[in-house]
Image (cartoon, rainbow, N blue to C red; front, side):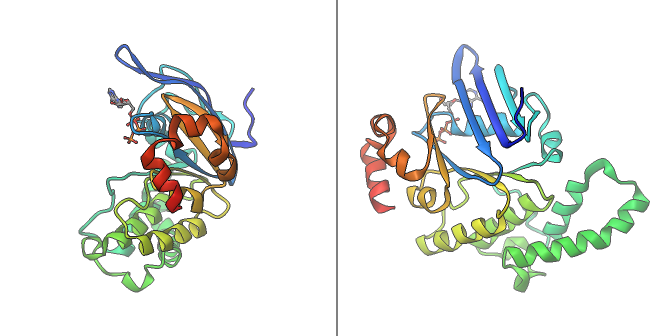
Length: 259
Ligand SMILES: Nc1ncnc2c1ncn2[C@@H]1O[C@H](COP(=O)(O)OP(=O)(O)OP(=O)(O)O)[C@@H](O)[C@H]1O
């Protein structure tokens, strides 16, 4: 039976590419409103998990449930309309449109096939209003008419988050949201992510341990295609199996030390 108290559930999820099994029975149950960081060594399968959740890949077996409903095997846009939105490491903003226009496109796109042309005209006011609200939330209201191409890198990432949340999805997937940012930009950005995802369920793939410990209520540790631990940052830090499998590496030690 599915449990709608979980915003997102993975049940014995498996994915093979050719003969190689990359995701090997991953299970995870994320409560509504939780912020979860997915960590693990390079090649552990974090991006593949995100691709399975967002519908880019269909699993070989197992289930993915969004708010208690099966979504495995559905198309990305169907999953999006059911309430899950993903932003990519590769930016998906329109460079030649302004901040406002980018957000409005995000809002209108999320309305999808649900409206006819007449309804579209009626919705336009709502979409404008929602785009203005989003602009305030991501603190780009002073850049309203600036073309996205002319924003700083950090501003572009903020815009991308605005587009990701534009449709009002309640489960948000962010792939390395602070990649490429300076330390001070990263600190500000973590606060921004926290603010704009209040009341939503957040999953991030993250390499930066400072971000992980600053953002996550719980951490899912993926090693060799399985979730070997899912617990609070403190408990994960103290977990023997995690230390052996992942945090024991020199690089991770240095990262955790810096956190
Ligand atoms: N489309 C694909 N076809 C074949 N193999 C793939 C495909 N996508 C991923 N893989 C393989 O699956 C494994 C896991 O990759 P994945 O990108 O999910 O790991 P990751 O944990 O996100 O790694 P990183 O931290 O380096 O981004 C890798 O060995 C990768 O080569």
